[in-house]
Image (cartoon, rainbow over all chains, first blue to last red):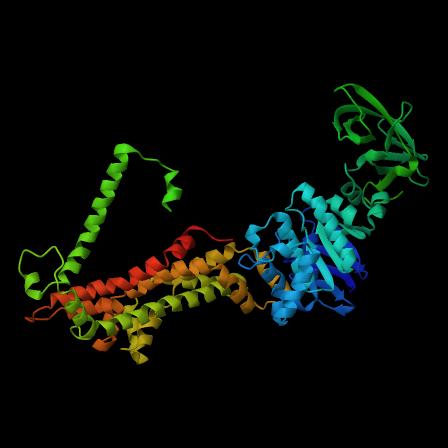
Length: 349
Length: 285
């Protein structure tokens, strides 16, 4: 039960600034996902909240109290690590109870809390096993169990699912989310997987090169990406971006002309999500199809525009396209076009 | 062990016999002097000095060994065994404790001069006991530690090899484990005691075996600093049993002492063999 406030948090390693000022306030019980490509500083940000990295500048407040200088154990947090970080020589029960043991709780109380957490995570039968004897998913659960027995104010997850196979990942994703909403504990979750971000987050932070590009609900980010980076990072397959020129209320690229939102002139970047394209014999966009990827529910068509730029369309259902079959005309609704400043990459319409 | 090896190279027929023959011959060559010592410890003095030497044990086993254990030549062998035991265990435990702690400091703490300290420790590898024996003697004599257990043990405790070994092992322990312990609320020494130490136990066992034998076999140092026979260790004590001048050597008792001197290291190796091999082979994680 806690709020977490990040106030212009910065991190420097020597002279390189890796986190360039991130501000965020997390509500009590909120599930925040920090998403970005590797090296964007998302793990560093999380580790600063955990207290495993010092904060170079800015203030971190947990429950309104400054926590910059507090040791991890005094921040009332629990963390789940990417490789689980279970103590190899301890049994599952010992692993889960270690924090409580250090806190000096009496043994029966530890056993009761561990048993309760184990029941919640369906680990009761495994309590005497060593981590070595567990599967990846079970280890993941033990790591979760270790976090929840201490009933912390804040959960921190550092890419907890990236070592699991795809199917288990989907299952654990649901379990984590379910557990979090049941316990109502404020959570910060780091991932590089935009699907995890979309499906789990109450709000997400899209990070790139130490900067929070956008903070918002998944659908906000999807529907109204604030920057070109956020636009391309969220959504799969990623958004088509085309260099275009706006003049006289029209957008021009290659030999295609589309109506542009009013008041914009000059070079712009036009973003179009593949799934917003619809086949239309009268459509303004002409695409040479080079490759089709049938996914069952929809088909991804990869090809080129007449200008030579790569382009992807995702059409519902099955489209059988013979290689080199040629042109496909597509149309798009005006509301589904995203315009970004060609220089800054910021959204302009 | 044998089961695991068979899969690699399978030998049949003549090859199998030949390798066995070679191995048995090797064992015989190595074992023969020990056998002679054992035989000599079970016969009487005149039987030994009269050629040819007997090759089969005599009937004086109990008498000779009782004589060695409880009266010896200068001092009962039992005393020397006890001295050696204290020294060997003292050195082994001391070395392990010191090197565990220094490796822990070097790997897990950032402090100024951390690398310098590591290299200083590493440098001592190039200075074996024999090289620094004169200054060490000066120091120990100055502290009045001649003829004492502390004098036997302390100068031999510092160990670059063991520090290096533990450092390498700690470096393979994932950082997340230390971080998880920090989040769990473990202070550094708690982490060392609860996590690091149990994880290193096979390494510790392997090292204990090696260091015990190292300590047991110390010869030069105890020879220098123990002048009182009651502080003699067994390995140097055997030499002290040799008579000077025209005295007659009591060979059966000396040989019995030699055999007794071999027993403890053998017991340590055999009893800790499993842990020892595991410690050298796998890095339990």
